[in-house]
Length: 237
Image 1 (spheres, rainbow, N blue to C red):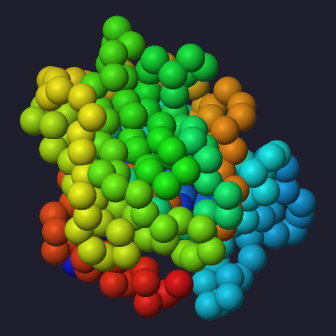
Image 2 (image 1 turned 90 degrees about the horizontal axis):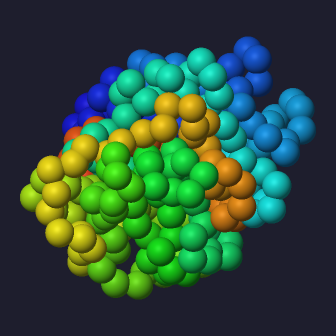
């Protein structure tokens, strides 16, 4: 594989892997962080095929999300990023708004863990906090990008120790900012939290759209890795 795959990831949600026998969204990483769908009906639990025939999970932006519940949440926090991270998402955003979460492992007041969210309606960010609640991990899209009425592939990478920020949209490197000063880290976690796909862990800030892929790695993608990953997913979706 020309880019870090599921064996390198701490979370790897590819709907083409299907559901588990128990009807959970299957995580293809080695940690088995299968996600419990909430607000969906059997037998598909949110899964369907998009216009291209690619499998997706559809979120209504009001009551649908997924949780990495105990005991899987403990495995997530064991593997979760500390000082560097890449998140890749392939999604159609129907009505993005500031604060909407695609992934959250924050505590209730967002002073631990990280969230992958919209900073504004056309700007995405990863925001992570240390043990005293300071924002120390903060790669942010450096310019507005088209989100609505299209499927968009976004890769956002960062490293807190030297304020590295990298970003690719549909395979093209784009302007990125870090947002805060370099810090030694690490990101700190509340291990009682239930990581959540599609909203904040404590409720609200729902994602509205179709999710074709979500991956989280404790590393920073290189340019060649990001371009190879993007080419593969753009061909699929």
